[in-house]
Length: 118
Image (cartoon, rainbow, N blue to C red):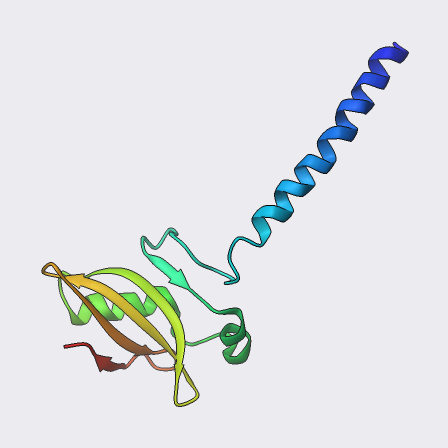
């Protein structure tokens, strides 16, 4: 019984540092707070400094993407990136429409399309 208990303690003691190291290794993979594919179906990039500066925005990435797909029927959003223009939060939305990659800027405050890539 003592041998079994010691073996269990030795195995558990070895596993804890390995699991901790794996968690630390993956924590620093990207300096962005949120990025990558998600349930929205497109990549969202949010710089932590901009996120902290602007705080919660009235228009989030998913809403900005919906604004774009409503304005451009048939568009497929591939990326939304938080940026700023004139001190205001904007979403740079990249999308594909009829085989062409395009980009528009959407206000993070009111959802207006600010700039259209022609």
